[in-house]
Length: 307
Image (cartoon, helix red, strand yellow):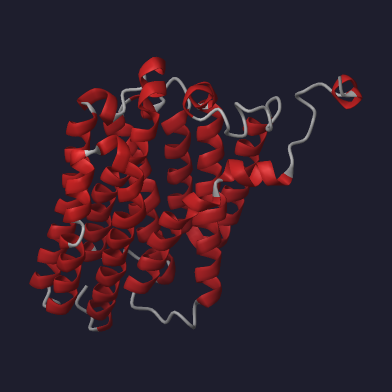
């Protein structure tokens, strides 16, 4: 046996930095970072004049808030991951003892501290996102136990709150405007379907641990249908609104990007277990491209003083 293992209890051994990075899942930081960027663009304010503020917000939404939520989720999901993803840092033993919890608490504190640099609105949005991330994973609330509530909490945090934060911070804490709030909520609704895509890889473990994800509740094929409609209908709604706001080119672009997703969605509905990752890889980029197109449309309205 390794003498170092005898000298130090498992709970005191430090994880490697590479393992910490894996726990914080940098690949998941993109959605809130992108949504914040959409909000900043939609504000109509000068992007070059506020580049420092934008950088602070991007760090807050991705490497801090999103990363802390990933650490929280991995800690409270360690028993489920032991079934679904035993290679993850905590169930594999590479993140020893209670280090997963310690990092989750540390990153939460860092997120709240960093948010004080973003003004009252930025801090409030960060605090709400943090509360939702802990409520999503931590018993006894554990919103994740029900796919409807859990995915809604994630979608609102990753898309809606990040988008509104980007706009409000650029406006100096002012109300983002009804049009901005409407699109942010519509894309949050669509993100609910995206969150459901992640549940297909964990059906067996979720079922064993009593987690009622949508694939567990509805079955794989029905859940795939629901996820696709929840992703596509909000995009169609955004296209209609952009048309009503006299932004025909933006409306057409969002509609065509949504239409391009249908072949991928049909393939996913036919083979949900096999195609969930495929849809995530190729459908989601089209979805988020529509977000940025609509953000530039809102920017045009804000520059004209309409939104």
